[in-house]
Length: 232
Ligand SMILES: C[S@@+](CC[C@H](N)C(=O)[O-])C[C@H]1O[C@@H](n2cnc3c(N)ncnc32)[C@H](O)[C@@H]1O
Image (cartoon, rainbow, N blue to C red; front, side):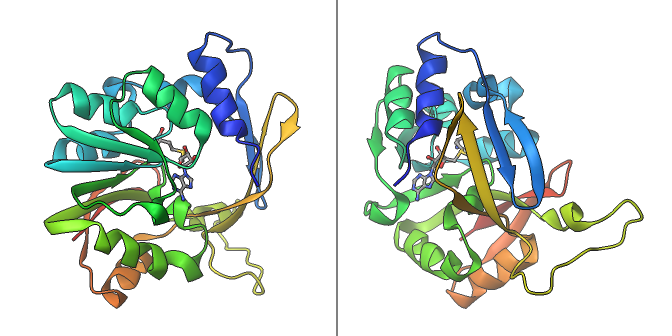
């Protein structure tokens, strides 16, 4: 069970009790703060890949893992119809407080409605957790698409994290896929239950899509090994 420290941090920020950032680390990287204001970004503060995803969104939209609802709010303000879901109770409370009209506490695999656009942003593949789960999640996402519907998802090729200063790759051959990370989060001195968080390089995502009968194209590369993909 998670302690929903992510949700607690969002609630603190929303309620004007911002004093500390979330601290994240992984089995291959040291502690790194995740600034809470970033989780409340407006359109102008979003990476261009996210702005592009919002521009391409149309029809009935599902924002998966909505967090505080930043993307949903922008879409709603543009007059689009959006449903926001998240598995964090705190996140959904905050999204509602910020004005997201249709926000539900629901893990992705429990969603059953269908949509024209499904958004998964801020390393959207993270929710799949590990490589062996990717086809299960993709099949489920496929079942949520209306005819001519699309999934817009961002991720990164993190092989750069395994390169040393000379550019050589250091690899533990016993480790599985490079993008599978053990992810640790703490907030105000409390430690969250460790999670798995998956980064997928574009070619691996594309291959997984083909396997389940979906097409996958790269929309745009980001500034740091990241990309936005469109799956349909
Ligand atoms: C990195 S945050 C991104 C939040 C938001 N999309 C943003 O860009 O600010 C990932 C979010 O996904 C949610 N999440 C993780 N697994 C999920 C699942 N299986 N179903 C729905 N939401 C999930 C987390 O609670 C968290 O709010």
